[in-house]
Amino acid sequence: MLILKSVLSTMIVLSTVLSLQSGVIKVSNEQQNDSDYYQDVVYIKQWNSVTDEQRYYFDVEVKAAAVGLSVKDYKFFRDVVECESVGGDNIEDRILVACTIINRVNDGRFGKSLFEILTRPGQFHCVTQDEETEEYKVAGSGSLESEWAIIEAYRRVADGTVPTDMLYFNSIGFDKHKFDYAYVGGNYYSTETPNEFTDLTVTEED
Image (cartoon, rainbow, N blue to C red; front, side, top):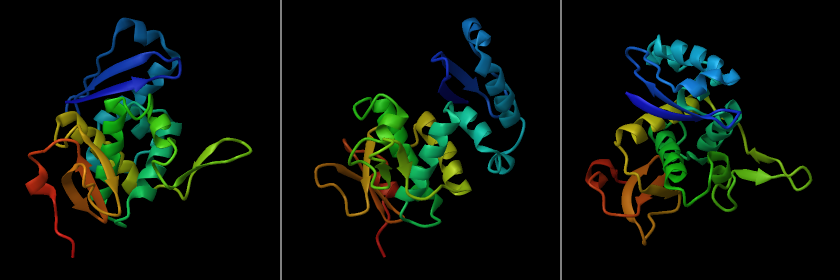
């Protein structure tokens, strides 16, 4: 089962337990009165009733509901993943970029929300802020591959197949003050503590 957390527009926290096989949805009674909740239920039921091959092509609205994000945040996340993945069509690189960002959200030291983390100065080179409107934008736009990488990243973080302290990556080289985790698609990923996954995931540069 994939345990997801969703913050709806009314700021009510929706804790949703999804079984991708049975489609079971569990929510508390007070959450059922939220107007946006019912649309999320429709999307989630739609999500649980099909295979991953079909989910891959779902609209962003459905994918956002599946991981508990607003459509705006999901699109922004997707675009950042696309831009920060230097490995071209390497889906694994996109997934690890997304995992790193999700880990930062869960860690709490990098910002109070996904959007705050994605727009934090100096963190992601593709994110800029308009001086006049103060709106944030990402250079370029995302793809289906990056949308799906976010789904896979939430799954890996939920089932513990990536270290929770994999919080850093760059395209220059491993951080000498951290522990090497993986080199994928041109990005170097590091953890804060020694990890049992290192020998299995690090690949040699060509």
